[in-house]
Length: 544
Image (cartoon, rainbow, N blue to C red; front, side, top):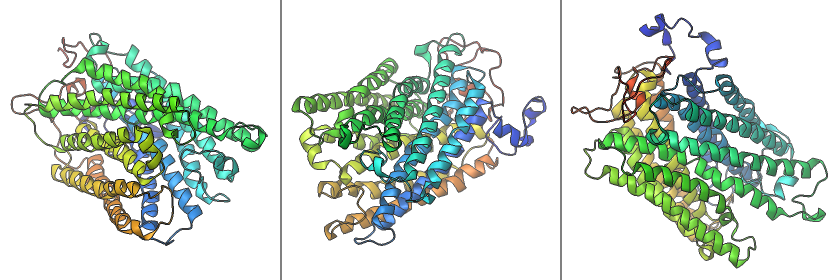
């Protein structure tokens, strides 16, 4: 069944007699499409909550002096904004895409472990409630930055414990989701779909899932050690008892840097689906894309200490992490090259998914280049903990992960809902988002270069102009996402709009989007591929 809310209107429900209805359909959901929809709605809710926190930050920074919040609350806002956006918005959204699309793309009937799938979703709800309500606890929410560095995290109030518990739950949810994705991809592909014929989105998610399983327990270890330091008298990170606060940073970033690739690899996968579809060509260099994704995943484990150049590392260590960080830019560059080569001499059209995909390449590349600049240890020593770093990671996470998700939504929503989105509204959303995003974050490069530190509630007068511009841009960017929900997503969920064809992205010559997801009707029936489909040699078509 589709992501449309009033699903009784569809004729195919007549023979789908075992489609659950009412609240049971959603609470006890075991269907991958329903769980995908739940994940996407949850992550959008969290995006809005994290967005409100961001707008409070930007409202405070609109002009110098303390305006709206005291510095303590400001630190809570920056911390919770980071945690909620990473663990509540970006990661669950990609899992939502995986749930919806992977079974459809590989010709599987569902995910491998349907009940575990349901459990991994519902674990996130108490975690999200714990995080979002921690502002009400004594002493307020966590305020030591999303990285939770000791010693601050050892001294904080009860919100820290709530945060640790919430992150444990979210980590458990991620690990279960990953196991599910790995088993589904490795065991449930339709006959004829070899690994090297899989869509890129499946490949990127397969590799991401292994990354998640590798690093989530490391984070769990770090925050459990923080918990025992706080309550059980251990001294892992407390120098007074012989511990080392820098050790926390090492353990955290051993999780934290692979984590940023966990948040971007599925985005690469989505873009690798969209660019060929609207260029009317096969993806250039498919095998090199797969190998590049694998290389990024392997190298992501040896770059973590570039977050720690100013902690007193030996020069040898600085050199190693500097060169390994520059090396990881190579497979990423291979990907960008292949996307551009796919577009080269293609019959391109620029519907909203393609606009977001091209916007992604442009803005993500800027974010990647600023990352390579920060990899240079002597430069990083100057720019560390300034707004330059904030600009860098928002260019890769917002214009990277979030734009790719928007692109994925516009690309696949006809399949999910059975109706076409309004092209005009999609284009308004794109241009509004692109311009306001750059107005928000581009000035931050200059603020950072001029020396404005991160996470400060107040600043000297010389930073006032750029901060004012960034704050105005942020509000415009925030409202663009509200527009997207109310004028693009909601109408589609209510079934308003032109009925979508089975494959809406074909041109007159029958070229366009390829893949098994376009071989099922729009909206996708509640149950698809109950018998494994017979595929053609390319594994993109079903033989009748």
